[in-house]
Amino acid sequence: MQRRKFLKNSTIGTAGLISTPLMASCQDQKKAKSAATGASEPIRPLAICTWDFHNASAEAWAVLKDGGSSLDAVERGVRVEEADVDNQTVGIGGRPDRDGKVTLDACIMDKDGNCGAVLCMQNIAHPISVARKVMEETPHVMLAGKGAEQFAYEKGFGKVDLLTEKSKQEWIEWKKTSQYEPIINIENHDTIGMLAIDRNGDISGACTTSGMGYKMAGRVGDSPIIGAGLFVDNEVGGATATGVGEEVVRTVGSFLIVELMRQGKSPQEACEEGVKRIIAKNKEKQDFQIGFIAVNKKGETGGYCIHPGFTFRTYTEQGHVNNLSDSYIKP
Ligand code: ASP
Image (cartoon, rainbow, N blue to C red; front, side):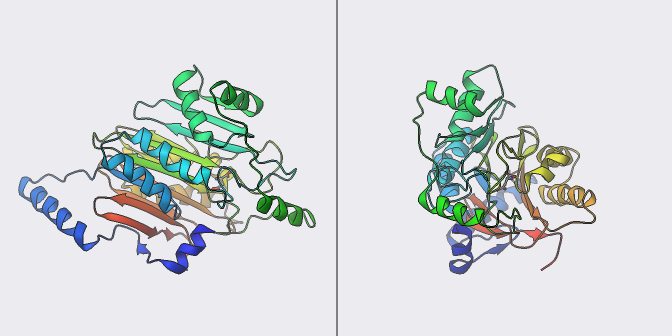
């Protein structure tokens, strides 16, 4: 819903950044300095996230601007959406599976390639923080289902009923037809994937979702799968995804995009190639949405999707911008 509200109320830039006048002067100074030295200065700090999750990117920026780490920034940023009961695609308030159970997926990855994930976890409001604890306090990368929930309780997370009245009523209504047809750009898939670069130039990423609305019990998509929904390599950059997770898993989308950047593609070119690989595997059927975003070590960003309508937020010293992603299928 947030994204729709935004489309009505705000100005969207085309892919790339639009500076506010105040920030432009600061950036112009930087550019002048770069031109003088012949070196292009990396843009940092920086936060980028899927969709118009402006409160989340603002929270990440609050961490980054004060010199906080990219890991803290992405965790704190995506927690904003996990806590938002009106967001029906992430955290509490998320749409349930077809049996009426809200199951959450999340993963996090740091500058050293450490990662943690929770899959299909119920009753815990902040899966991203549990994923971070998996990364930092266990010898494992992924915990699933009851094991993840048990681990969360052991780490002090409280038990929370994640099914809000609104999501429950919609699910009851859905059961009348039980048609499982994710609609492009309609809010049954709006994962938040976030990447950040801190003042040290270190990159981290986080991704969290309630998954596809009315999915089969036990279904897990791309979002908590390192390499699919999220990948970070601090030498190169990071990428994250939203949309029909099965297709992102099939192409290991985020890892692919980071590897393409390693080979010299810009974040934009790499996202475009990531989408094209998915299209190549779906020549007969393209009625689904995928959106990728990426950032490289220089702080250059990119985003690309299959169908028009995907947006992504960027926050740098130049400003806080909602970018309309270019799409494979043209408007
Ligand atoms: N990628 C998510 C999934 O497949 C859905 C989304 O982007 O909201 O679970």
